[in-house]
Length: 300
Image 1 (tube, rainbow, N blue to C red):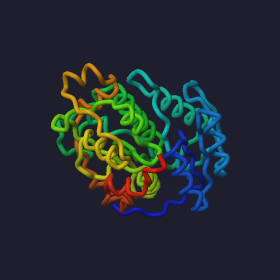
Image 2: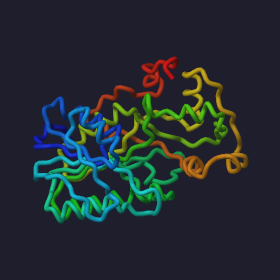
Image 3: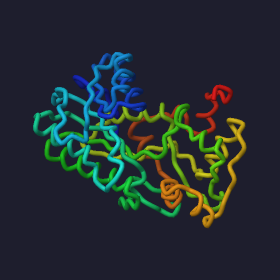
Image 4: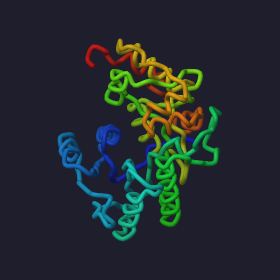
C-alpha cells in the first residue's frame, strides 16, 4: 500500500494540543490552511501565535458550532475523551454536529490507544487482534473508534485510526514521579510497554493522511521491546536521578495509584510492521535511548 500526496483544501485539527500543533506545523510548511479547535483560551492563544486559525469549542456541549469543512477537508480527531464512563460523548457531539451542519470531510485521522487490546500477557499484537479493553479509559477510546467507523461508513468518509502506545518527548517525561521517589514494580514482574516519540507521532499523523485507503487501523510504536520499570530506570539514569525503589505486587497494591495499577496489569508488545511498511515511515527515534540523546539532562 503506497502513500501519496493527497490534495486537501484545508486541515482541521480537533483537539489541537501538543501533537496537534506539531501536525499543524507540518501542514503549514506545505502551504495548507490549518484550523485548530481547542477547549481552553490558553490553547487558543498558543495557536494564534503560530499563525493557526483557531476556534474555542466545548465538545461537552451537545451541539458545538464547527467551522466550515468541504468534501476535500482533512479532519484530525485528537480530542481526549471524557474523564469517566465507557463512552466518548465528545466524539458523538462532534459527529452529530458534522451531520447537522452537513460538513462531510474527505478523511478523518484519529488517535486511539493500544489499550483497546487489553491485557495480552506480553504477547506480540498486530492490528488483527480483537479489541478487549478492560479499563474504562480504553473502553472510551474503543467507543470512539466504533462511532467514527459507523459515521464514516454512512457518509463515505475515509478513516484512519492510529492506536498509539505511550507518547514521550522533552515535555512528556515522568521526571517528577522519579524525583518524588514513587516506587516501581520489580522488573521481573513489570509488564511489557510500548511508546513513540512525539515527533515521530506527528510524522505518522501526516503520513496517515496520504495513505491510499478507505479504512485502515495502524499500531503506532517504535517497536522496541521493554518494560515499564526499565523505562523508569533509563530515565533516572539519563537525568542523573536515583533509580526508584522496586516493590512486589503486594506493596504495589498498597502504595500505587489506581491509575498506575491499571497500566501495570496490562502487558503487550505492539507489532508496528504495518505502520512502517504502509506509511513509509522511517523513525527519527527508533529507541528510547536515541530519543533521550537529544535531551540535555542539565536543562531539567
